[in-house]
Image (cartoon, rainbow, N blue to C red; front, side):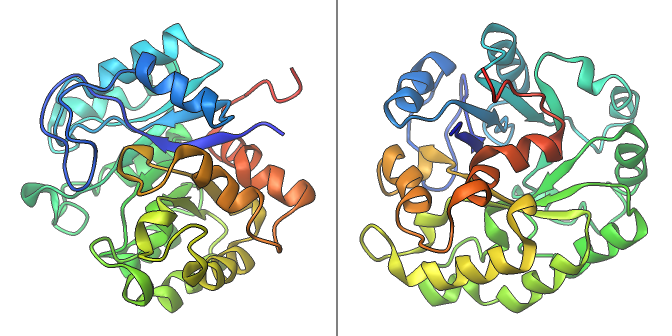
Length: 274
């Protein structure tokens, strides 16, 4: 079974945010041995422009050097008028499969409602670009976007969980998240799951809510991943949490969750049979 991580970061400068590793540089060449040790075949890079303004270029360069190991959900400044001309040729960049915006910086936190990103949704829909969002703060707004643009493939980051919280508090908006499964153009990245538990591996207190999310969205819209540079456990444990510890996930459905479904959603023609 091929295993593809739905979210990793690499960067060349800056101070990482939150609980990410406090190092000023983390390269593809440093990440690849960690992936190999965990039996992770490939990964989707999310450039952390919040702390490294050159992260997008770094991600594209990594995808160019290692086309069978990396794809990219990239980013540009949506508030700048000149960014609008990038949409149509965005997928021509090496490894580029779509867009991802975390909207975590103070100046970004209202972009989804103040008009800054209004142009982006129809443009991405026309261009066939999937868009990933750290949308736990604004799930109702994401619903409205998905309903207005049914051809726009949206991905909710980190299970849509309450970002600063852990254990039961992290799942405070679970019912709201589950209701979005009725929209066929909305998927969930189950990235960073171990971070949301204070229990030891295998983090049993989050198994049931993960099962509920899986049951709602199904294996074609439920994507495994790590955000490994802020995980409280090993890379291998991030893998085995899903491949060995969840009895309700096995067979062809497990293969979908661990990479095939993600690649189909973002249009990555990954060589699964090679």
